[in-house]
Image 1 (cartoon, rainbow, N blue to C red):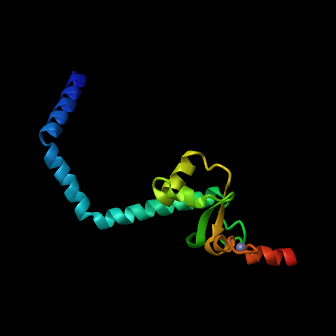
Image 2 (cartoon, helix red, strand yellow; image 1 turned 90 degrees about the horizontal axis):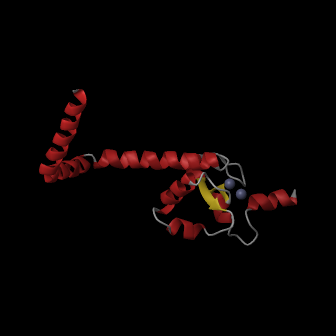
Image 3 (cartoon, rainbow, N blue to C red; image 1 turned 60 degrees about the vertical axis):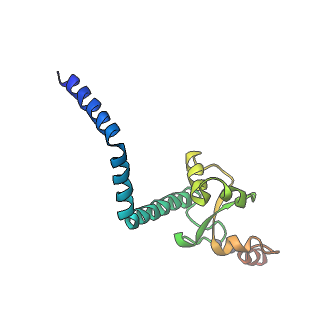
Length: 134
Ligand SMILES: [Zn+2]
Ligand SMILES: [Zn+2]
């Protein structure tokens, strides 16, 4: 019966892993050591994908000046509290992951680094000021 054989195979695999636990762990550690560079690249790519998804989910551009260059864009907590968010588990990436899992909830917007920084300025972002004066 093929089913019984499959069961045997699984049991055999389990026994093998139990008997060779240390060797398997060592092997994996060795793999990680040898592929550190590749794993780092992979992590970087995964972070970039997550960031791109975040930017896309929150409008795809700077809410202030319309900048679309991904490298410039950051997530802004509209009501403030961004620092607290980022200090949560996993830092910025952890925050993006939590937001993604929550279905990209409201209360956030995308700002470019310039506009995000200028938000703290006494008169707000110069883009807004120019728009007000016009
Ligand atoms: Zn901007
Ligand atoms: Zn601006």
